[in-house]
Length: 391
Image 1 (cartoon, rainbow, N blue to C red):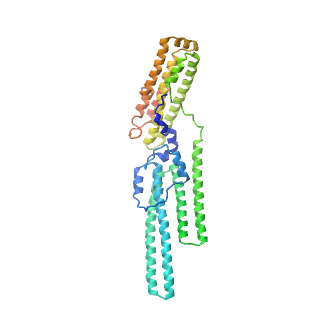
Image 2: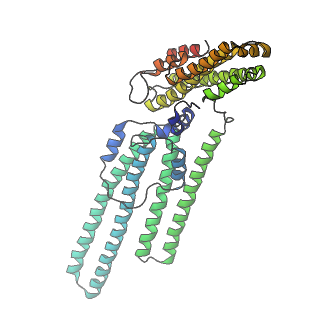
């Protein structure tokens, strides 16, 4: 069996791209540069390993996601925000412990009546507080910058906003857990610890609810329309030759009917995909992304190849006769039988060598667009392709 572009099994479809475009398309590299200019402390905690991250990892596993993808940039922004937040919590806890020690010393010195020493420690206490205040201001400026860039990355895209919000919710869990661990280290009383435990539980509950909401929304979108049956684009020359070799008119007529339906389905699917691209061009102020066009091109070229082959095959079968008797008479003639077999072989060969008429039109139209290409696809070109399909 000849299967056009066997490697395409591992490549996401045009529909896959449509659904997750906001997360997989490459964005302006300057966002990443700006994020990486923010100085942050190192953290060892895992980032975004919650329910929504795992859910999307499975959903997006078909795609080659890089640092410039929507999900890659959001992950970077969230990592930076979490790193800054955790460091701020840690430093605030350290300050509390330092202040507590100063206060203990001041209490002891007050009992001893050592006013001079109290003044020295009070100044140290004030200096540490001022030092933290300066650090906190600087940290909050970094946090604001990271969140602002994250907002620019989202840029009103609902899919990216959902993902960012869910990542922030998961960050809240790690922040609450750190606060709880530090409170235990400071040996705070049970009432205080209980409030931290409740904060952790609430953060988990909210993150779970947000993740569930996103999952349900994505599944709802997937089920919005009945799942379409994937158009049959494979072809098997040996199978077609076996049908001819049986020399039965009824089998040939049945296969002709099947081919007519397969051809109509392919044309319909190709036209639908072209309409999707055309509508996207009309609605978008920006050129379509290279990755989007590459996925569309691969799908359409695969179908164009199958369309050319099946049209040629149908013509071969039609030429054998209009009814069962005529067909069987034709196939009874060894020359006509051999000609039919030769035409099937030729059609398969043309498909392998990418010589079909419809395919040539699609290859020419998409030759300058896709990954690494800088051409532009217009609605006018798409209209001509639709005419070519239905010619």
